Image 1: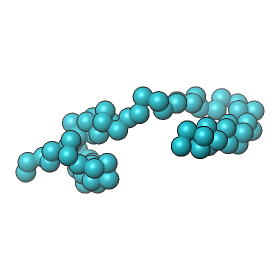
Image 2: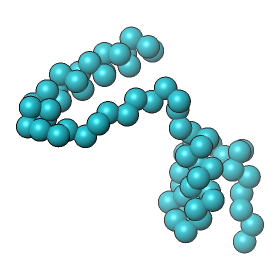
Image 3: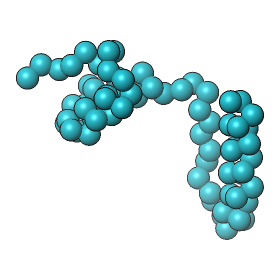
Image 4: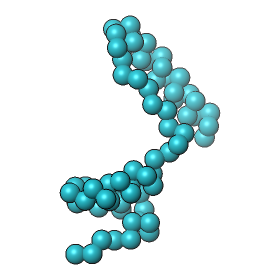
Length: 70
């Protein structure tokens, strides 16, 4: 079976291909490289109960920043 042209697939089509061909590591790496945004923020995992208590405020701040960018 030949592989599809990954660059011509939409994100939804590519995702479906990945789900149906979980053993295709090459496709997974191409998918990640193609759709990973360099602007994504990575937040550290909560380390304490206080971190978890502050999560709602951090989440709200993130949503507001996203809304303001749109």
